[in-house]
Amino acid sequence: MSAIIEVSHLTKKFPSLRNPQAIKEFIVNLPRASRSENGDTFSALKNVSLSVEKGECVGIIGKNGAGKSTLLSLLLGTSHPTEGTVTVHGKRTPLLELGSGFHPDLTGRENITLNAVLLGLTRKDVIARTPQIIEFSEIEAFIDMPVRTYSSGMYLRLAFSVAIYTDPEILLIDEILAVGDESFQKKSGDALVSLIRSGVTTVFVSHNLEAVKKICSRAIWLDHGQILDQGPPSEVIQKYLEGV
Amino acid sequence: MTLTPTFQRKVDLLYLLTRKEIALKYKRTVLGIFWSLLNPLLMAIVFFIAFKIFMRFQIENYTFFLLSALFPWNWFLSSMIISSRSLVDNVTLIKKVVFPRQYLVASVLLAQMIHLLFSIPILVGLSSFGGPGPSLSWIIGIPLLILVQWIFTFGIASMVAIGNTYFHDIEYLVGILLNLTFWVTPITYPLSSIPANLKPFFLLNPLTSLIACWRGLFLENKILWKELGIAFLFSLILFQLGRIVFNKLEKRLDEVL
View 1: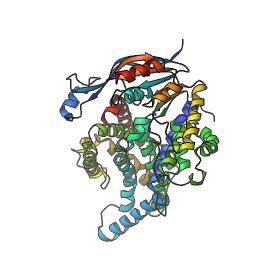
View 2 (view 1 turned 30 degrees about the horizontal axis):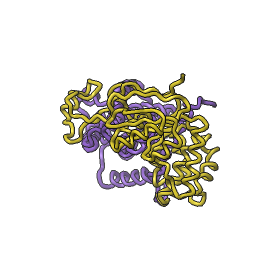
View 3 (view 1 turned 60 degrees about the vertical axis):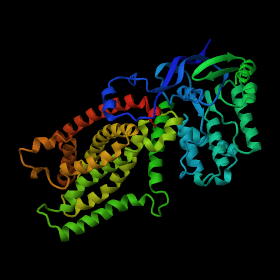
View 4 (view 1 turned 135 degrees about the vertical axis):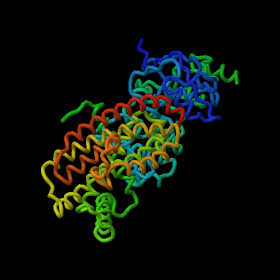
């Protein structure tokens, strides 16, 4: 047994944004690690425990606001638990909002380098792989132009290409299977499936139940911040559809 | 030199973020990075005209006197102003990618340092004509002072940048405080012009000893070890404080951005 992701009794609370905290209160509470328990918080995740084995592909389904994306950002590490622990062994590659690390005024090539290094490569590695990344993205002609001149499809294609060429060990995917036009969608989908098949651990958040059924080995149904059910995708999806 | 991949990656990331800061500053300008040299040069000319012709001070070669402190101050000033927004302006990056967030602050300081480096030739010129002439002590002194000032600025900038994500008021407050700091630090006037009974209070300002070091180096070719030691001590304290505050507040960054 080698759990590559281990989440135990995870709770994530967000401050209620209705009344911004006063500076006085903030400074008084500063010595304490967590926000004072005055109840003015919103719990996005409540006491969630789960583990993912190496090579597994786990699909997370649930309604809007169920806590799926919050869970993903906690697994990624851009967010920290209020209570409980998250342990992840290995390099995490996010496919969240594609191209969020891009700067509009930098060229496609400059953005490739910066983003691939952000995703865990060294500059030397990136330079060696840049031709492949450019080829996969199919935007050779525009690669030395600032990405602000790109169409949104080109933007996404480049971002996707960078991500899959950074040797992902754990892929965290948030609803991105629709990248670009028909032919690129197929190409990106195939690339992703072959990565998953090759043993990359994947956590996949999606409303596309067919995709979850097709790709994932296990599905987790999240509702109001809690796990309602988990197991083989077809069974969980069946229950989910009946529950909705 | 071979480095471990993780360390190499960190160096690369810091390098790329710094290069991005510089590239973006001069994007869509005709002269590009040449502005970094032109800017301090034009500033020197303006001051030269102003103080040679309009305002005559008792201090000998006032332009050199002023610029020897003003260039290092400008590095501090621009670093503080830009880095106070460095986290707020990179929300998408912070929310979607994991990397050491302090790098966003560090890269601003490094990018701004380029301007300081470009102003050194101007100080060499001023020292050669009307000063004692640059000496070998500059070769040791400049990197040493840059290092101390870097640590010092990084400590304060870390606190300001992370604080600003919680309360955007801080960046406005910083603007005012920097203005005040400029006048309570002996930049436009010499430390010797301060009344003796007020001097201890001025020495509480860590920038006083730092600026005194810069001035000692450029004007007298001396490394003021005592002042440097004091500045270094202040730097270490602020650096450590900055680290503690940053690490503590960073944990809830996703909730406030």
